[in-house]
Image (cartoon, rainbow over all chains, first blue to last red; front, side):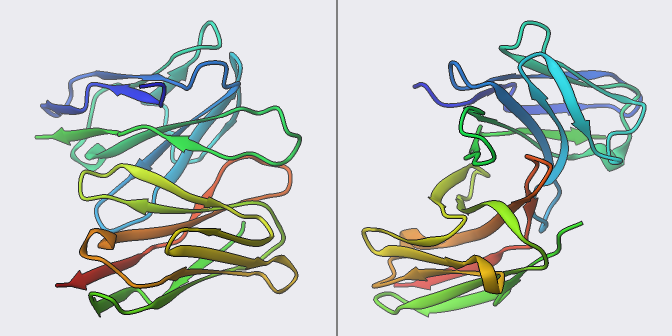
Length: 116
Length: 109
């Protein structure tokens, strides 16, 4: 399978704990995106990387959230001191990033986070 | 920022019926995709269609960029078409997508 992969698929944690999610993009895709989706809503943009550079962050990404893509390949999203409001599906997407402004995104299966 | 509105919000069809889903957006876009979200949450790419018309089997899509809308057509619907359909758009100066609130489709056997 050469699609976007995410790990873990499910995470249950207690309020106040730290969690880290991993995303492996499609091979050779330059751009990597993180989105968050709560029940009944469409996904909301969190941040994106062009290679290893984090180029845009949403105001949704509070100080407790940090994302990295150290070698321009996989990415991690860490949430510190989790709160019940962080419960959501966290989606990762990647795109080739080689066709100018045109940019088709491909999504992974998501990590479903439940904060108790 | 760009606003994205999808209609109808909910749709119930009998198997074999046809349907049209609409996506309106408030500003010019460089990117537009239609997705189907399955019950497990996976977003499946249907069309990348910032302009023009495309067809893939029973599905087709049309985007009229100058009038700021896109349509997704589903013909001869099947129960496996059930799920949530999202339109997502990307504006100028950014690659992030703004998603609509989706159309929840249920196809009855």
